[in-house]
Image (tube, chains in turn yellow, green):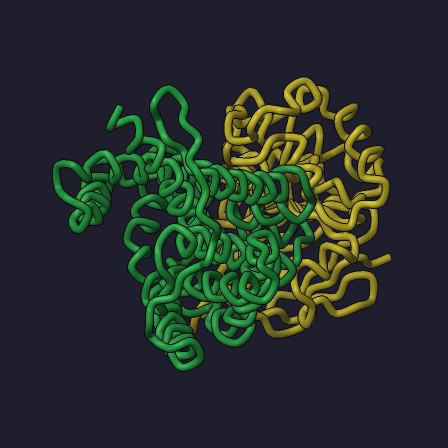
Length: 236
Length: 287
């Protein structure tokens, strides 16, 4: 069953279109990687889905409803979680406050307890300012904040970009676990190979359009995708 | 002993400046522009308190009148003007706030006249502590200011709407993807910023004389304290207000009453040149 569908989505900032007619779908329970070169429109697509792009045309359908007319907070209330690439925690608030500040959470105290169990390092430092956290801890808090509302879809914008190489594998392990918790995932990633390895399907953007899309394993094996978009040729 | 006396006077003056600076820093941190109407909100608060005091004879009701009336005027300014200009540049919002200040001043001049008005408070004997004279009224005003600060900081740090206000100040987009409705936060902001400015205006009015221009004249010290404290830092604004109030009073024997305001200007220039983030602020401000 289709959970999220982009239908001929165009948009950008000011006068210039960055997305040039993207059609793409995400099924319930799957992980979809969106890859592509710098400037291809990956992060812009994620922002369009959560309403942070000033100008969007086309339809972005989530569970049957078009999101485009809705403000960001209404999209979040419908069951979407979003982790931005940068500035993904409230640095001046404590870890606990980062979770408490999320609106629309039923039984907030219990939910925070569940997330502290899932991310014990956050529980240990719950009174610490989020701005004092390491890159890996910060990423865990960003995930926990987005998971507060028990979303059915998580949109992750370059979740490994600010991580040390040692923490990248941890982040992908965490993403791979999300479907087992009932959360589908749209992940925008520069580390396309590693992301496709944990994904069901993949999509490669080029110039604001879908250049390639399909099963993740097939994309990983595709020589043209490997040479043009995935950083190295298969046989290199 | 003379300087200890000036110190006490400076603390009361500093609380007035600190409250005004708190109003400025809250608006700057969350709505992201310097609200030049803050001084005139103070004036409105002073006249509201004066009216309520004349009607009831109670300073307490005067204070409540100042908080409620100025909070509502501040909210009206947001609803009628600032909300519509939210996507415009900082300069556009600054100019709009100057315009609102002029409008408020003109309306107060028409309604109350441009003569000097004073709070009729009973004469009392000062308390004397080791030779330092402290007027009971100053203690009451300090208590009012402390209560107002306690309420604002409790709101900011202990309530959901306060956390949301701080979250919007920290990162507006992240606040939105956390489900926070910016409109709700803005209503709370303008009510609080107006109420705080109203209390500051009432305190200043009781200590001095009330005219339609007197709040405007407090704008420079208030902005100086907001900058010195680190723009966007509520704690910094209050601390810097106290520092500035005491510094102004202690400078009086050297520069005279008339020129002590110049000290605020010198401090503001020094902070901008030497430590633009202020004492408590971060480089990007708005925390």
